[in-house]
Image 1: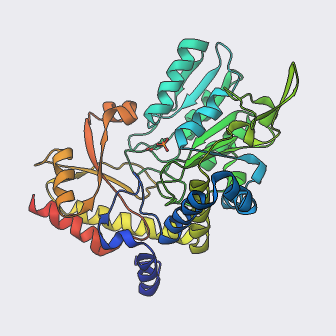
Image 2 (image 1 turned 120 degrees about the vertical axis):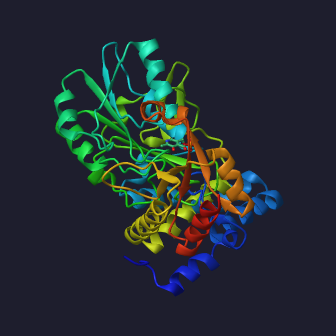
Image 3 (image 1 turned 45 degrees about the horizontal axis):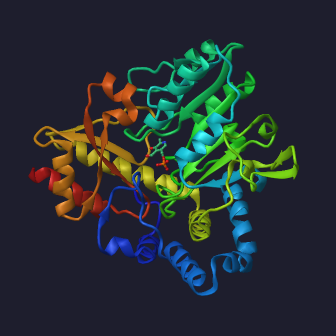
Length: 395
Ligand SMILES: Cc1ncc(COP(=O)(O)O)c(C=O)c1O
């Protein structure tokens, strides 16, 4: 395989991202480098707020702010009324999860690679509401066993809740196949797309999810402090957010309020308008490039990285699974993960370390306390991957 984009297109991506002149950024699963256009939209808006006033700027840019819902909706093939803008994926996820009216004995089916913050809330619901948690089995390679999943489904199963791509491994879980099962049996389906949004095309009609939660700062390349929630319009009426403000609901009479008919019932009134425009700009930027090609280039670069790592005798690749994305995990026999991360940083190579508690079930079972993570995006290059390999060779 070779680069999906032409050399001049890759040069353009890099010319449009000032950060690449300063760092070799292989920490896109942490927070990606924002394109200059995204950064500038945020800074310009903030300057305008400082000069004109916050409310006055919002009134002036009302249409552009409203259009951000439309852009995000188009990006995942949803309706704009199905999008709530929130400050991160965790808030989006918890808004969705805590709005489900669980009863004692309701079953939640989830994965071995579930993200720590999600799992803590399953445990909280178990303790406080008496829900039952069941883990979907996987094969030795970490692939979800879809046949086993179907056998686990019966009338007490209330929710299937799945992390699309975990924080500490390269696997891409079969989100669409799971969605088909959930739809067939009429079960709510919550998809954590925090690490997958911006990596691969996402279409909620195909995924058949009830909820999709996303962050902006990772593979979408938006600023930090951005995220969104998609909620299928057909179920919104059944859902009561954990709290409401007078943006999420209208106080109609002394003893009466009405919730917003759409997903905005999950929002609250005050939010960062500059960041909202930054998220919208990042989504449009990705859409202009095309998610199909972004995904192919990510897979090409990540596979290039895995192939190069596999040549190093002292390095063990820790990714498992049939389908792999842009997160590459490994460890070095001679150097502990945090030390190695610091060493790479000396060469201006940004990577990160995943700790066991982020995906406790999975990493504990595999007896891994910490691991190194290089997460690669389409604006990275094979020579940046080569630089990583050179440092590892010298350890
Ligand atoms: C799989 C997954 N889900 C959820 C989150 C939480 O996202 P956020 O920090 O935007 O709340 C993360 C963060 O790394 C993640 O990797």
